[in-house]
Each structure stands twice: as C-alpha cells, then as structure tokens.
Image (tube, rainbow, N blue to C red; front, top):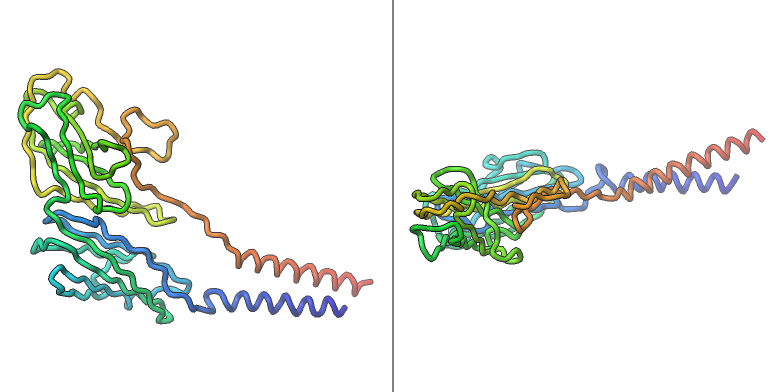
Length: 301
C-alpha cells in the first residue's frame, strides 16, 4: 500500500509539473522568426516582398511588430504594425522604391510575444540595373540553333529560381541552365515554340523567386523584370519553333517529361515535430490509471 500511495503521489505531481512548464502556463522562449526578402536583388522599377513566419508558444502581439529599413545613404524608415499584412503565422510587407535608389538596403524586423519577450531578425536586399542581362552574339537573322544567354545575379535568392522570357508579350518560355549546377547562367534559342521563322520579336526577360516555409503549403514569390527590352529577328529556318519549351520539375509525379527543366525549384516541405511532452503526459496518465486499478483490486481482496 505504501508503494501505491507514493507512486500515485509521484506521477500526479509529475503530470502537474509537465503541464505547468509547457504552454500555455509557462513562457520563457522568444518568438521563432524565419524571414526572407524576395528577391534579394531587384531591378529598378520592381518591389521587394519581405515575408516572415512567426511562431510562439503563447502567441504574438501583432501591435508589437515593427520594422526599420535603412537605405544605402543611411536614411531610415520605421514601419508600424498597420502597414503589414497578417495571415495566421505569416507577416508580409511590400517595399516600394519609387526613387529607384540603387545599392544595398538593410532591414530589421522586431517581434514581441504576448509576454513581452522579443526577437529581432535582420537582412539585406539590393537594387541593381544588371540583376538580369541578355546576351547574344547576334540579334538579327537568328537560326534555330543560335544561342541566347541570360545571366542572372545569383544573389537574387539563396534558393533556386525560375528564369523565363516572353516574346511580343506572349506566353512564358522557361530557360534551362547552361550548366545544371551553376545558377547564374541560362541559355535558350529560337528552336522553342513561341519563335517563328522570318519574324520580328521583342523579348522581355524575367526571374521568379520563391520560398516555402516549412509545413505551410503556400508559395511566396516575387518577380524581377529586366528593365531593358531586346529586339530579335529570325531568318527562314523550318526548325525554328519546333521544340516544346522546358517545364518545371513536378514533385508530385515520379516520371518527368522529356522537356523538364535541368534544375529543380523549391517545393512545399512537411516536417513532423515529435510531441515528446505529449508522450510523457500520456505515459504518466496510463501509469496513474493502472496504479488506481491495482489499488481497487487489492481493496476488493
């Protein structure tokens, strides 16, 4: 009987202690903040999307979220909560650069939870006229196998990004890398659908940067548009426009089409977090129940 009494006492207090030191009763952890600037390098005329995933065991005080942006000249802009977009654990702000200031900007995001515990996260982004550049050894009388190179500043994103272009404001045409392992050099040619022989074209080049936060199946993205347009003409060549343009790698199927891009883009990731505290609580409850059952059984005897 003494063992049963002390066992019940021990596991009851163990259960109480586990509950008290875990949410929502106890809080000594700062908010967990993951923030990204999309893109990391933008062309003049474009914007920067700063998006953050914020989690906390007791909750976030949205009135205590702020950001300071410092431009290349050292001028600061303080942003209050009313300029942010909120969507559950996601906070987003779109930075405009109406004066087309070039060079590096800094930002610092400050977040407080309902207990007043603070987290600060900082980062950089920049504006550059040469974030995207299109090069070709000739722009007139192109044949199906004349290469057109698109160079992209790899700092536009720490992740892979999609490079594409349009012809005469038509459909998007994705571009492969020259080398699948090198993320700043891309190459295309008039062999792809969208091009036709003996015609004039105006090309606009773009980059789509994207990011997925862990366990959130939503793509956050932004686009860079080359501030320069490019004019091409094609010659008479029946092979111009013969091939299907490259398509994105499809993470949901095993067999990919032959014209898949030679690099993979970011995709949604699900990570299951082990509930160690929940396992301990369940085990403690089970032991307490078993002890009580045994005690009642002994009393009947």
